[in-house]
Length: 364
Image (cartoon, rainbow, N blue to C red; front, side, top):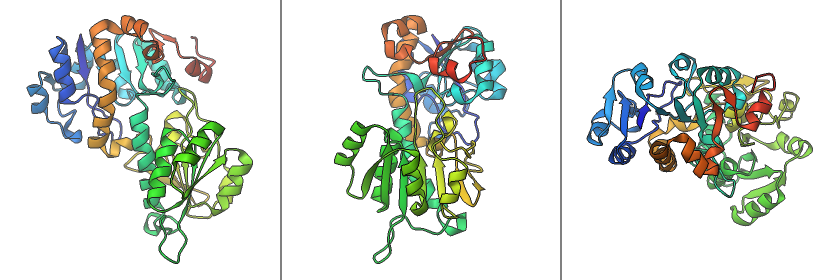
């Protein structure tokens, strides 16, 4: 199979979808790998490293899309890439269709096969291709939240860990999954007073037993969230419904419960965001204020630490890339039901129920 690795062109997206080590594995199996010039540079991988691994370098993104049977990316194609996607071409990347109707329509019209990282499942229903980036995003959400709590950044001027004689800052984490777990661990490590909320009592029991002592658990409800907000400095939105649009857990009216200079970090922004007032931002312009509350809604948080993120991501994607290259997408998905769940759009038809539910007016 011919595999193409284009350079990511989304704002400040510095990751790359395949390392030279991954290229070497594919070439060893008889596949041809084309990598766009400088695609790996921001993740620490030179063109020479790819060539040494047996890959071939192409100068232009058009060339990569034009020659490849399978495109492997990190983030969804953006508008200027829509016309490059060909009928029957396999695109393997993060898509998050449920929050982007224009992308959904474009991929339907392209006639391509869209296999989304975020809906591939393990037999136990965990999401293997989402977990490593969720770990990075969860940890970075606290790092970024702590930064924007600083007064020069517009925040209220709170140090999350406090100091002797001064209480630590309070962090509320909405969602006890991988993102929330990692966010709570990071915040706890800084010494903050952390509350993690979820609707699953078994999950809350597990977190209560395993988290540090400065992490408390709370059943997630509108009433309980409203009770927490007046004394909270940083809220991390870490809600996930696989493949579907995230629910709004904090409304515009609820912002008035927070003190001015508090920070909201919406890690669920890829799936539409879990705060009513959220809209996507970029690393170049990461925050905005509504009602004196700072919103951080960067849609590709792990892109800020590409050397860590690329290695973490490709560790889990490469076995699937090899499986798809060796067998073709139809046979690979037939043999692996979890991989088959990654199929979101196939040759013009939406095949993933949560995406179809997000856009009932689209012909499926």
